[in-house]
Length: 388
Image (tube, rainbow, N blue to C red; front, side):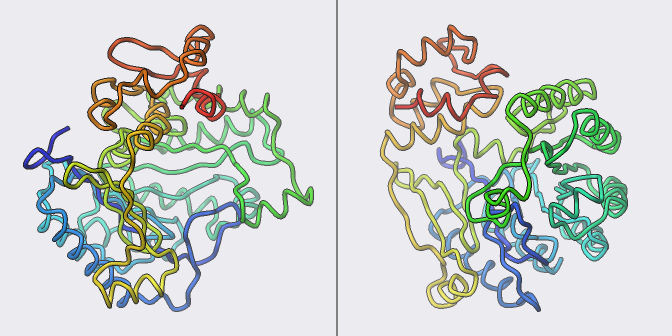
């Protein structure tokens, strides 16, 4: 995994914090502004990128990911400028993956061609459902027909495409979800992200759920939905390479794999996090969460960073375990020791580890530790007990 001059390769995350509306299930750092201050935030992102690249030097760049918020509300020329700047300041890998998240409203779908011309080679569409009632419940701004039209359009423009769906929705039967998933897979290119609906703290859905406005499927139903999701995606040639992500072999999200493999990533924009290796230490970085104060900091100091903390060996080990056991490949023992400074065994509760292996939730070899499908289903509880 070595990059230029023996350093870690780098993934670049760029956060565009603005949305047309705030979805009731979303706890991401997203804000509604009318009009969206395009010029100011485009200039601030570029300035922060230049500032950070000067600190990091010429790292090998393996991916760029425009996330949000709603990055498809960005001016395409802003996207083009940031890609051009990043690929000049860093050494782009020959197979550089450049992803942009987009919503399938007619306004944003009309921009897809411009994003492809700007250099985006992988589009991530926030479809969330192919049912109009479900889309209204989820607070989405598009219809099922618009979603299907955007998918058809994206397939002609981008060599790689992924989209999100949310399932285990209130009242959703297994047969209804399976029909929706078959429709989605008929349109899918190489990758799908399929998330069970969860109630996140501080969201509109949390308040509604607390009052009993709606209920979610029970644990057994949710597990059955997960199992049928895995079975149907596999039948279409997509493997569950991570808890909620399914891809044809070779079409996994390289950017997200950097997170799960605990690689270096630079996060730019309001509220963005990063993990950066410098001078033998691994730093956790964070930027100001509110858009306007972040922009002011960048305009004054070149960066919106608010903290840069050295991670201890124990913190690195914990983070790498939490991320690495999400993916089917698991954690490479040699990579773990090199990245954290601790042998894998020293980061795990030996009693819990032995029990988890015995129960068929984990598989351990001298080379790696990985969760089985049954283990990934219980990952949160498992990790809480397993990780020291």
